[in-house]
Length: 337
Image (cartoon, rainbow, N blue to C red; front, side, top):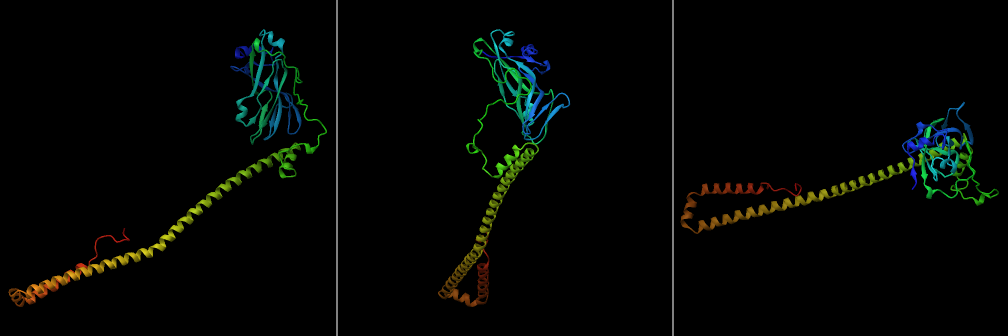
């Protein structure tokens, strides 16, 4: 079963499998590759050489740079089996976490058994700031797997990049020459602003950089437009709520006179009922007294003898009864409810 080499085994590879290596770049289970001498700014098509007059590279936002490793790896069969008989090496290349933290996008790739040469890869700056890298800076990680006898491939790598050092451009064959423009499918509409912007990007530096900035501004406009749309929707919702409250208030205002009229009518009816009840009771009591006094000689004599006082008392009783009838009851009115 394939095993990952640890730091002790990796240090044994320096100078033999990892050419021009440095023991300080060894990690527990990987080796950190350093930025090499040569490369190319892909947006501008400009190659560069580091280590003499130039000490590093500066990568602008949205730009891509092809770079090489300072180290060379030798995974050839005879080299590996001189250290590990009947075995082979396979490796995984991945960017360091520092790159991703700074918005640098880089691919993860692999090294086949039998490969010998310099390692090349591409990094792209997706941040909004320039990123700078010094010659010899540790930026890429290589993890080496040792393949046992039953895992060793039958055919070792013998591709077009074998035994190449320094920066090597892509050797992909690509599409055949002579194809018509109508045979290609593009994502942008022909003649539209996006097509014009893409053509400007392809024009190279400095027009490509300007086009990239315009593209970012367009994206920012889209974000602002979306946020404005959300604000507009929120204002429309608030307006609908306010209109609803106004409508409820209008209905309440129209219902108020009707409520007052109903309350007054109820009060008038209650007052009328109290007057009728009090008057009826008074008349019944008076009629009872008249019948009682006229049917009894003693009562009639008493009435004749004390008629003045009895009349005053009856008048007072009548006044008290009227005041009691006019008094407002303590129960709550419909308005108070």
